[in-house]
Image (cartoon, rainbow, N blue to C red; front, side, top):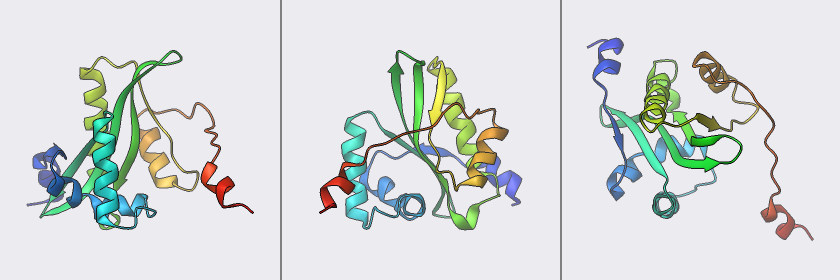
Length: 156
């Protein structure tokens, strides 16, 4: 079966059970290396699921090829949105269409839910990801600022 057929038949699932969540760890760890163990990852995802987080993934040959973590939110500034927390393709599966397929799926979910927009943040070094977003119609609309209390706590 060629890649086009695999992508056509590859099913996107929501990870709701522990085994499904854990199957996403290897791929998620590539994006979030601070999640240093499967148990830390599982506990974090379980907490976030209780707050509305959803973890979608594409599996092929028993391996997660791409995933998207997202949540539905409402803002005075933007209306109803899907906020994409995490979007990553396994390094061995990049440029094979898995990332594009899961991003299109998220876009379809936003349309079905009558969202006004989709938002995500992306590290400035992730040029390939930026190309994917721009190719799907996303625009760069601002800068993201953060105040990290972990750094302040560790400072002498």
